[in-house]
Length: 320
Ligand code: A3D
Image (cartoon, rainbow, N blue to C red; front, side):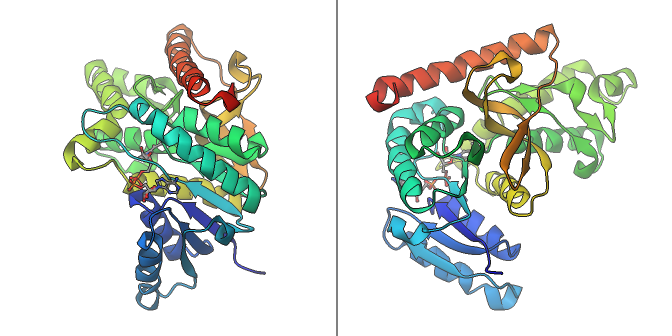
């Protein structure tokens, strides 16, 4: 059987890291696409030359023409601009919306059967716009945010409890932004919910609240430190987890920005929810019951996402 073909649209910090991870995990052959001439070709050649030492079998190709992504099984989209210090994700909307239009059209024409994972910010609005521009089925287009947000939460919790990150599970809902909703009662250490760990004296409510806030600000903390761009190692790893779930039909339960139509009382919008990802793409949205406080936080997050989608419609009349 031929190796899967993985198209990485955007060959910047995340795109290059994605290509390296695909090769190291032997998930398939890579086409690294960018409008910048030379960048995807240079990165593809550099990564290919790590093959003899690493011992992987994966072809790497750099491209500036969408024809090269023809027949891709997976497309991971990072094309656009990242944040600089002082910028919010929403500040990227105007410029990245135009990018989504060209990317959506390129995918529609050359890789209409692909599973598409969007990473470009502001995430929930960009994945919605990318789906609209591409016209692909909703279950084949989703956004990466929840896996990263919950990884950040898990990392901070593992430091607080001094336990392995593998034994910490975390649950994050809502839009990818300041209004994301980390759900403490569904987050555990080896199955013990966080509120119980507070009662057991493992941590205090104040410390837990601080960790929740640090998770919400997780992206900004890294932007502030790097000064020239945003996080890229963990965002790439998170998207690879989703791509692998699709390619290997793993039926992973992963939070992602999925099209929600009916669940959570929502009518056809993209937002972060728990999903099952397998060979059918986003095969199911898991509709959990929220308590009053959680619902209030979720509603606020939904309003923020709706505001961004409306702003997109204001900028590009074809979306209205
Ligand atoms: P960066 O290193 O700047 O790479 C972006 C690449 O996109 C550059 O190589 C550009 O040349 C390329 N590009 C620009 N316009 C086009 C176009 N029209 N077609 C094809 N390629 C184009 O950024 P990055 O890799 O650090 O980040 C990429 C995106 O991911 C940004 O929008 C970030 O805000 C976003 N991001 C999202 C998360 C989430 O958790 C959702 C996390 C981190 C970054």
